[in-house]
Structure formats: C-alpha cells, structure tokens
Length: 137
Image (cartoon, rainbow, N blue to C red; front, side, top):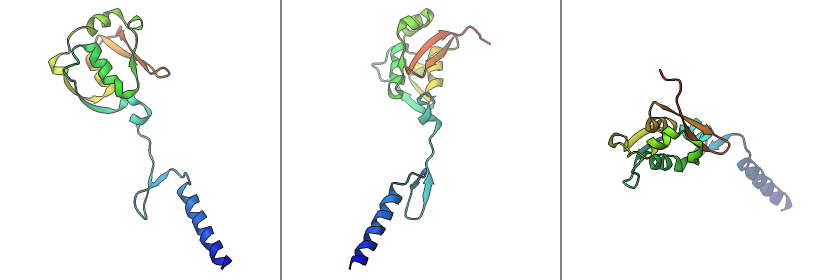
C-alpha cells in the first residue's frame, strides 16, 4: 500500500514540477508547445500599431498627443521642456484629416507634429517631448 502511495505522490510531484518549469514554452494543446516570444511592441510601447479615432473631446494637437500616449505609459513633457514653436502648434485645432489615423504610435506622433518637428523620448522617465527639426530635407 505504501508503494502505491509513493508512486502516486511521485507522479504528482513530477507533474507539478513540469508545470512550473520555465523553459520558454507554453502549452497550446495536449501535445504541442509554442515558443514564448516577446514582440517589439511589447518591448517598446511606442512601436505598437494602433488605430485611433479621436473622440470629439479631443479638439487640439496637444489633447491628441495626450490621448495617443495614454495607453502606452508615456506622457507628454511639460511645456517648459518642449520647443516654443510646438507649443503654438499644440494649441491649434486637430485637422479633420487626422481624426482617424492608424500606424505605429511613434509614427503617429510624428504625423501630428508635422515635418518641422521631431519626437524626442526619455525612456527612463517615459516622457515624450517635441523639438524643432533643424535638419530638414
């Protein structure tokens, strides 16, 4: 009887250890394992692809930036850290042509700012600032 109990306990322990083994794979069915891969968008939230339809509460470029950055964990820098020319642009109305956009978040930030500006990011503080693009082609 003790041998049967020992065998059952051993099998249960083997099963538990295999469940918690971290081998970089996850079960996707009874006989199939799939490699766990971290995507570029998971490593860098500004590289995630999004499709955004700005609500009517988003009226200007600044609020569009804040709305676009909210789910990424990044924030717009304080206006003291942003180029003064962008502050003027940020108060302008959001163009109708940019109310529905899709693409990577970083590309949409560049789209909203326009070609005269570049997006500068601080990944440690998760802050995005806008500077004047001194090199234009």
